[in-house]
Length: 157
Ligand SMILES: CC(C)(COP(=O)(O)OP(=O)(O)OC[C@H]1O[C@@H](n2cnc3c(N)ncnc32)[C@H](O)[C@@H]1OP(=O)(O)O)[C@@H](O)C(=O)NCCC(=O)NCCS
Image 1 (cartoon, rainbow, N blue to C red):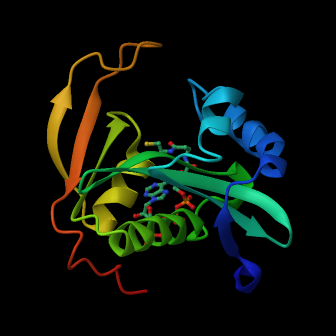
Image 2 (cartoon, rainbow, N blue to C red):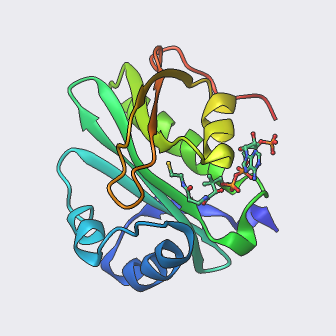
């Protein structure tokens, strides 16, 4: 089934499906404009995951000097826990490596255990906590780093 999974750069036609997933998976959803900014972002890589022709996930990084900053990732609820989020992150980090990024960082809600577990599995470690970082509910952010992206290898299946 997952053999038909592929990743491709975001296109205009993906945006309605992205917004539908975003509305169901993110408590503070990105606006349409935010996704549109990723269409031709000069220092970003934004990929959608497509399964049997349907957009089922997406994620992005910004290339900041030598840091791959993970901006967002989501998988449609009905497709979660099938390894798709991990494959998407691996693809993003691989492409970041190819662009010469040496490390990667991200912020995640302190209560988002699935995402924190995913990032830890990929080799990110918790480095800081930002109190009340998220404006919608004042939830803390956990700052995570993958310090050596240059020599990073994805986890073995
Ligand atoms: C976080 C998210 C992208 C994970 O995607 P996914 O496709 O379900 O994750 P995968 O099936 O690839 O899981 C990979 C690893 O992540 C961790 N993980 C994922 N979901 C988990 C859960 N519900 N509970 C515990 N660990 C979880 C596990 O370590 C898992 O490895 P394992 O299968 O060997 O145990 C998904 O839960 C999601 O879209 N959440 C809503 C949006 C969001 O919170 N994004 C993160 C913003 S920072």
